Length: 296
Image (cartoon, rainbow, N blue to C red; front, side, top):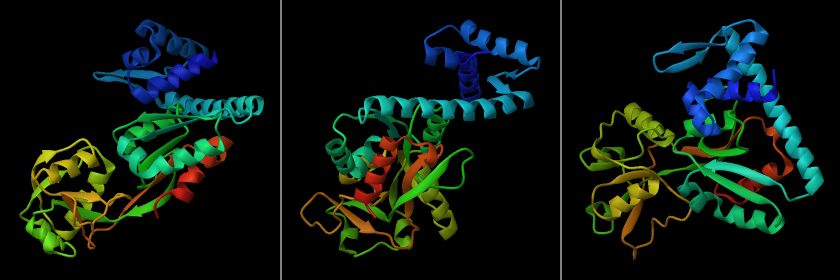
């Protein structure tokens, strides 16, 4: 068995599909299958079982996947640290996040990090949800993921950086702008622009609504927070969104207002990694710069 066999097998277990991994690696499905078959010949057990919509590891496969994933992760960390020893501060930091995050949470940290480590590179990859960020971390292709912090995730460590209160985004000419804040009762009966359906922020908000007994009506769902704010500005509804660091709810000159909703529990955001102790010095430095320079 080879290291490539194990890497491909872990990728297949994560994706649940031979063809998806073949596309990811730019090879044939037959080539991916050969890696798995070689492992099965050497271990003398079946590692994958086929289902109508893909494949899944058997009990033996889950055992091998867990051991292989940990071993590959440790090896990759060691190789990257050796590379940093050889090239000094000319390594790279791989981050997954969304465009809204980079603009509102990470921009100052990026500038500060570039100033401290001019030879290092920052590589950003966009994901659509915290769940997809966790999958990307598990595949060991990334160092850090900026996520909505939630419950425990196996094999992932989370660290809160900021608590975001919720606000209602409304047009400047909306009657609600006369209010200093929004009560939960005010959220009933207005037209809502919903957050992305598969996002952790929407799940958090829906859970808060359910706990407070609030039923909202909506026929509009968007891909990100900024689009929700834009549609509210255009008068297409009201958007309950996290208060981003550069929003100015008290600004009376712009086309949009952000009114606090104190009864809703804040949204926790921060970092997710496989293991903090395994981060390279550069990755840890970038994470710490966001914790120091980012919003509180």
